[in-house]
Length: 279
Ligand SMILES: N[C@H](CCC[C@H](N)C(=O)O)C(=O)O
Image 1 (cartoon, rainbow, N blue to C red):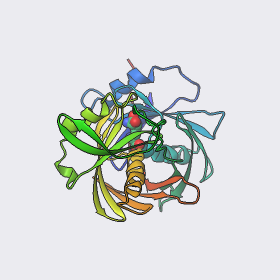
Image 2: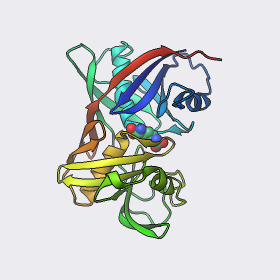
Image 3: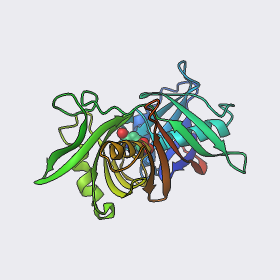
C-alpha cells in the first residue's frame, strides 16, 4: 500500500488515499504503522476519503488507534497533499472532518508546490457544556484543578478537539510523559483532553509544549496552538493575533473579532514516500 509521510512542524503523519472506501481497519493500521521501531513511525495516520458534504474528507487516527475529530497540523499537510496530487485544483476549498467543514487556502512556493497553508479552524467553544468537564455551564478560564496535591489553574476549550492548558514560567521544565497523562485521562474530561503547557513570551508571543490525547508528547499541535492562542487572549495575556513558538518553528494564529473564527497559518512538508508491505 503506497503512503506519503508528511509533517507539520514535526507533528508527523502517514497519509493514505482511500478513494473507494476500502473498509480497512484504520485503527489497527494506525497502531501498527505509528510504531517508531516496527512501523513507519508517526503521531497518527491521515486518510483521504471522498466527501458528499465538501470537496474532500479527512480522517485522522491517533497513534493509539483512536479517531480524532480534527487535527490542525494534519489538515495543513492534507491541504498540501490534495493540491499537490491534483485531487483538488483550486487554492481555496473545503474539507469535511468530524469537527465540521474546514476551509484552507494554500500558498504556493517557488517549486510550484504548496509551502504554507492558512486555514479557518472555525469557532472555539468555551462553554463548559461543550467542554467535556463536569460542573455548571460556562467558560472554563483560570479554574483550579488539583493533580496529586498540586493546584494548577487551567483553561479548557473545544477547538475541534478538547484542549486544556495551564501557564508555566518555563515550559521546558515540564516532564510531559509524567504530567501529560494525569490531565489527559483525568475523570473531569469524559472524552479525555489534550494538555498544553504555555509560557507567555510577550503580548504577541507564547511558547507551547503539548501532550496529545492518543498520541503523547508531540513536537507541535495545531489545534492546541489555536486553543492556547484563544486561551491566552481570554486570560488577558495576549491580543487576538499570536505567534506560537514550537520546537521546529512558529504557527501564526488570528482569533478574528468580526467572525469569531480562528485562523492558523503554518508550513506543511513531505518527508518521504514509500510502500507498506501489507501482510
Ligand atoms: N491527538 C489529537 C488529534 C490531533 C491533534 C493535533 N495533532 C493537531 O495538530 O491538532 C486528539 O486526539 O485530540
